[in-house]
Image 1 (cartoon, rainbow, N blue to C red):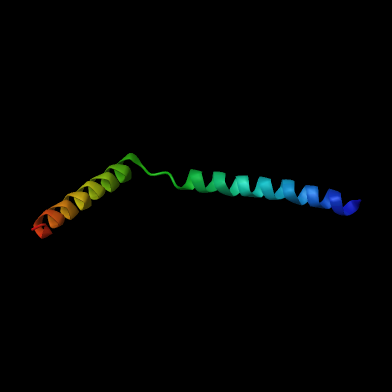
Image 2 (tube, rainbow, N blue to C red):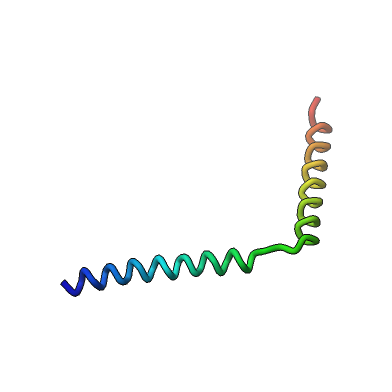
Amino acid sequence: MFGDNLQAILVILGFVVLGGAILFAKLRNKQSPAEERRTEEATRRNYHEQSAEDRARTP
């Protein structure tokens, strides 16, 4: 009887801890607008360079 209650408490506690960890990670992982622009520009530059290399290799 006590084992069933303990298991239910641990499942609920695990759910709460997991939710807290996900919330903490989401709140800490935000980028500023400047960082986001810099990331997007670097991504576009990498895609452009890769496309140029692919065109140069194509016979």
